[in-house]
Amino acid sequence: MMLESPENTRRVLTFLALLAASLIGLLLLPPIHQDQNYHDFADQRTILGIPHFWNVVSNLLFIAVGAAGVVQFRRDAAIALLFLAILMTGFGSAYYHLDPNDQTLFWDRLPMAIAFMTILAMAVAERLDAKTGAILLWPLIAIGVLSILLWRWTGDLRLYGWVQFFPCLVLPVLFLRFPPIYSCTSYWLIAAALYVLAKLFEFNDGAIYSVGSILSGHTLKHVAAAAACFAILRHFQKRQPIRVASA
Image (tube, rainbow, N blue to C red):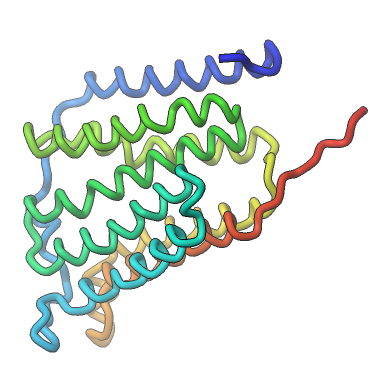
């Protein structure tokens, strides 16, 4: 792999060392098992014969955004893969919420893991080194898939926790430390803010539902997370290469 400069080589090696160290560090943690209370969502209503109606149908937002991205960027494999994962997240999450349990949750988390890892590889390509990001895409996706399979086989969520939260720690550093090669960075920032909002909604599922019993926090989580995906879609729709003036 040819890199542009010794400084760029150092940055890439530092990132790879951090990635490897964080994965090895998982071995120092005790196994993490799925809390079965996770499946006990606040809104249990059946409407039009659909159990947990709003938690199910709110996934149509992921399907819509994912389908739009796949159609528009079908000739760009990495971007199309990201939006295919978002599309399948909509189907997987709807399937899970029809009957919440560990077996159905597998199909919810599998496409999400692929989406998280694809976003990480894209961020590396845009901010750190394009070739490194392209090379890491498939190994990172393999880690994402493996994290879900390990949970299915062993009940241990440590690697899936890394898949979900390592990008949350690394992406802000990449975006704050390194200059962009494309315009419209603001859409990534909007997506990050919406993702944080989605997690807040998720953690306050019952408290939000207790206010009038209209919508639960988990349903609003879907809305905010789908809006974050839409912000990412807008980034790819509007971005332009940034040309650096010669000295």
